[in-house]
Image 1 (tube, rainbow, N blue to C red):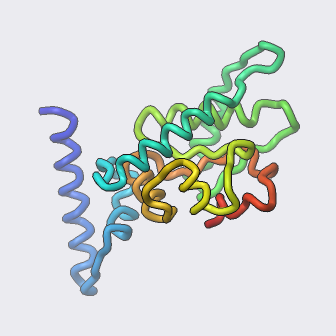
Image 2 (cartoon, one colour; image 1 turned 90 degrees about the vertical axis):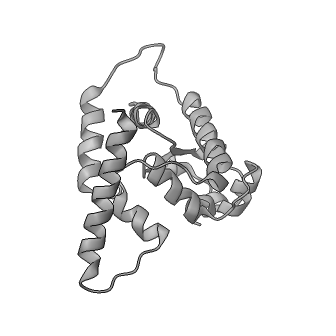
Length: 183
C-alpha cells in the first residue's frame, strides 16, 4: 500500500466525520467550507483548471525566495530554534511576525521556514520589492494568471500546500501597492 492509499482513507474518515457533525443541523457545504475543514488533515491535488496558476504562483514564490540573502558579510548561521519558534507560534496564532533590528536575519528565518514548507506543496511568498501593480488583479495579470480572483487561488494553495501567506518586508510595501496584499 502506498502513501496515497493512506491519504484516501484519511480523507474518507474526515469527510465522514464532517458529514456526521453536520447531519444534526442540516448543514450544507461548499468547496471552500470543506477545504477549510480539511485543511491540515489531508493534502489535496490542485483543481485542474487552477493548476497553471498555482504552478505560476509557486514558481514566482520560489524565485522570490532565491532573492532573499541568508548571509551577512558571507557568514551564515543556521537558526533551528527560531524555525521551531515560528512553527509553535503559528500553531497558536493566525498571524505571526518576525521582528528585530535591521540585518539581524528576519528575512533569512522567514526564507528558511518557507523553503521547508515549500517541499510539501505550493506556497505564496511575496517580497516587498518584487510586487507589481496596485492591486491583486493587476499583480495576477502581470504574472500571466488566468484566474485573477485571489480567493480561489489562496484556497487552492491552502488545500494542496501550506495555508500561509508569507510576506517579506511587509513594513516596506509601498502604499500604492498595499492592495496586492489586501485584495
